Image (tube, rainbow, N blue to C red; front, side):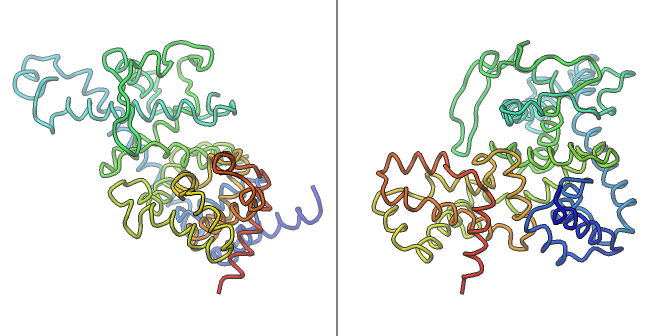
Length: 401
């Protein structure tokens, strides 16, 4: 570790020792990358994502309260529905007077349970393939959810619920355009025992199961948006950062902390996932056009070339913007980009600058390439040096009038 890097760590420690954290100072430090050592990145993200208050004296009571709130969500949305399902229909009175699987009432408990299963199946399919090139998400967590995996009670886990559901129903695959495919789930989801997802011993759960739970709770609490494919790519890096925190006191609560940070991040980014807002000023179409508008201002020649080849922004910037570049780079590089995005007070405007920088950095290739070659470059971005990209984006920001 170089002297300069050690000094940088000390700067972060000094900023985080203040009784009231100076947000402007912290943002300035974080913009150029946050050290992993000592759990500094994990702590900074919790502040930058407006989870932890700036006043450190409030942290202990605040965290205790938030983690208890999350435990209550687990009881209400995972444990109780499982118990209710087990009890439903056991007595004649329940079947005839209260609820039964064929009850047409949309508010019936069975209807809610079946509706939730549709969302759960989509989440399950997506989280199982989260960062497949890394073993992390398939590994068991050191801190399985004791509330649900309580050995005294045989509570239904989401994993068991999925396995039971897929034996009875077909899977409906949904994406941003609506329903796209109906398939037999056994093969499609590869749910049954395989080498890829080994069944863990009782009392254990894999990291992807924790992510599944976070997304399911989010979907239940936000029925207007529920779950849309791609949210798994947003929550993954946040959970990974918190679940690898070297400080076990933070690491133990990675699930609850990730849930609240993800919720805050989605409150700023959720319009990108709502199809009805696509063409509004807060929707994704406007943001995609903003990348091209900025490119036209910064590099007219390149802008005209893409226009001439009819390469529309939605062909590649849709994924760049909605998933915050999480699919364009390896996870450590995504995390480094997010250090900068989260620390910029206008973080999603800076994302547009980053996208523009990515185009300008491969301008020579794009100017000499044909449509097919250029589309390949844009959908499988050739530069892996994120420091170069972020430096270029900062130059574009500094040179803005």
